Length: 146
Image (cartoon, rainbow, N blue to C red; front, side, top):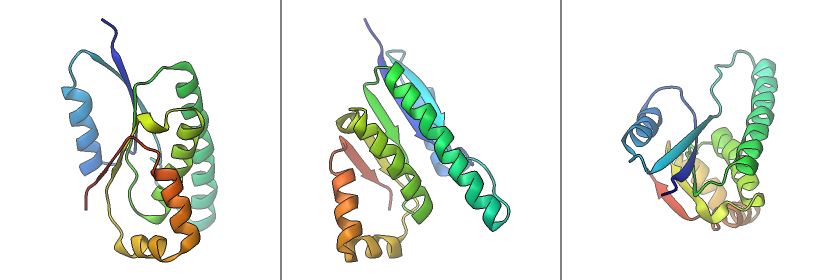
């Protein structure tokens, strides 16, 4: 019997999402093979250093994501965007790549860290709302931890 392959994209800074992903990874049956791509992990200092390192990390993780998706035949891609401005933008870039490589409908999105003001800005701006809906309507399943 072939194993089901799951790719997890997650930040590992401690806290609830780290524990959630560890629980999932540690309690899946042997029928599942998992890969983990860690994104957004660095601690930043200073505005410009922060910006430059974030861009470098985004490009580096995007390259690793593309490589993994092209070389592995994943049944599920699991992504955990925090619903805050930068993490949502970063993970939306990854989700766009996931879509472009044909994995959109096999993607599970688990939103956490809800920012109500950001949700209002997106829903109140036709441009942001259209982009958000276009990108996220194609995923297989969305969970929201509110």
